[in-house]
Length: 319
Ligand code: UDP
Ligand code: MG
Image (cartoon, rainbow, N blue to C red; front, side, top):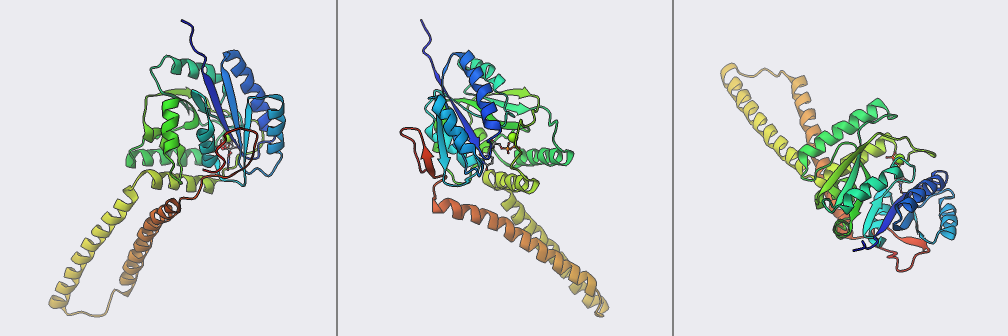
């Protein structure tokens, strides 16, 4: 029996990747051709301000398997990946960064594992954070420790968005049409049998990362809010604890008044308690605000992305 050929869809989100994209294309296509599998390469231009779109058009000109989608503005990597998932037609779908930090050389091995049929997805994780600053690594590790403790989606430290999935899993991901997307969480949440492939960290080949430190902090907070309601519970328990302490103190003050009479003292301590409690209240309000803000965006049901230009047929342009 001859095995039916399967198609692979590669999804590549690109934001200002004019330098890296041609290199990425060369390397990846070399690997894909060796695999002798049919493929499509979906390049998503996420509102780049450089020549990324022109580069995509040049690639599409010489390779009919290249499909480009160009967004009407920058919607973020999550939206770009979602657009890829929505429009991918392959039996296997793989998400990859354009900067070669996701080594295309791993693809054959990943495909082989999936083809055996034991797993539905092959995910990759960096075993080292070589080339990354110490502080950044420290906070990254901290983030993974926290989120795994408080959410029910397994989120692996060092996991990249570089992942090969079968149709089943892709369909599930497309169904998860939430507006606030956090792919690392979504991949974990949908479940399925995942094989973890470790590899050494690779530095980006050209251009520069679009993540600032604060951008990452915000991303981490988003991840936690999107996949856990533990912060809300913490706020509640803090409130209960504080009320209890306040009650004990009240009794203490009353008893002291009855026994000793009460000279006016303790202004400083009173102030610090008031300020402390005020701070906690604002923090809790802030936590609630985060969730309400997310709910607000979710309820508005706006599209994730708008495509302004594409060479593909039957492309979902707004979703
Ligand atoms: N990216 C994107 N939209 C953005 C930011 C990034 O599509 O708003 C793409 C970027 O072009 C790259 C991938 O997402 O292909 C990962 O970005 P980057 O290399 O900057 O992140 P890092 O590897 O440093 O986490
Ligand atoms: Mg990168």
